[in-house]
Length: 588
Ligand code: AMP
Image (cartoon, rainbow, N blue to C red; front, side, top):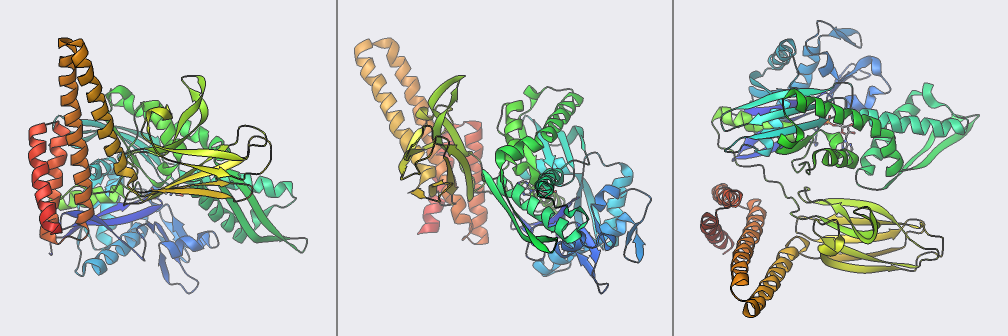
């Protein structure tokens, strides 16, 4: 037990600690949360505050609160906190110490060794300062690894032939993008580029500007009022986070300030559309940086095999959309982007400690879910344009919503169709449900309907449509939303086969070949679909299994996954049979 090594992501905005136990990587909570704000401060009575408490007082007492110390690492400088000054290493050590204590409390044993991550661009001096901080906190830093490398480890993107991946990391206050080459024996950062003064906090600032403008138009200016500015800052971040999942955010702050003896209340709605326009210039900058990094690695975007999203701000849908447009592949974000660097650090720590590590198991949706609306398809207006709300490989449970509008004046009802699939033409996807929202207000076209999709870990999909102006709602619940497609695909495969077989009888030899090939393909598809369903089932059993059974399950899942990845139908049959036996044994 004593050789346990923890993994630490010492971030600019937040820090996290993780550990591998029983082969599984897990984030350790600090003060009941997975993210520890990287903020240190002194309370009124001189007591040391680390984390959320320090963050809470930052706006009010910046003179005795320190944040973003990571930016100063490696500098020969001191920062003031209350009556005294401290080196960046000392402040970082206080954060590390808190993480170490949380790990010790969680694990019930002393922890003395850690792997700590740093940005790929960190100089030797910055790396050394990080080591020193570890030592001051009572931690032997067994290895410093690059953050993009840790992210790649969390995604287990090693591959027999090697893989080239892009890690796009947009945190609270820093942005960097790295091209990482991973082979069986070596992981190297080929190129890295970024801006360590760009991040989600800038998005907050744009919202704050917008709120100030709104208040100024009413004759109020709270810029000199610290408590009011602190509330606006918090409200702006909350609105930003809401807009990642919903088309509108209501920003409401009662009694924000007093003006001429009367209280000023703030109530303002911000649409995702307006917010996206505010942050678009930042995203353009990140895409430029991405192209520079790819070029710096001597590659083109066509050489990239995967794109991984790291950092809380990558949850912004526009970030994902712009990247997908630029790279023509869906970025991966199923490992929580806030936690994936710490997860990778823990995996590296386990490898150093000689501990077996299983893959990071995350519940994801294997399919995309969405609805249809009048839109553009191939540049033409089309009534069944697919509007995906929950994209495949999104971690579940998840809720996403989007705004739609009625198309003609006095439209009193909308038929909401629910589809599963990837095709931009909704009619080529599988329709898994449909409902009517009726009794809408008699108003001109453009009446906003907010449709929300919620998918839980059991594959149950709730779809709700709500008329924005009145709150009128209609909804549907679809059970087995994530497996239904498998059944439909089987039916479709059978249908396709029967069409071929019928055609054989009429058309002779040539089409018999075709039907054979298709039958094989359909058989293979069927195997693969069944195998994935089995893996899903095995993953659900993991939580309740004891350590031995869990190891067996993880092995079984891995063997099936390997066979799927290798497209080896014989190996797949064997692996599926073995996993099915194991599940049968565990369930009986
Ligand atoms: P990190 O430095 O990786 O911890 O990222 C922190 C940044 O991510 C902060 O600016 C957060 O406000 C931002 N963030 C966290 N969750 C979301 C979300 N759901 N949508 C947009 N930004 C988010």
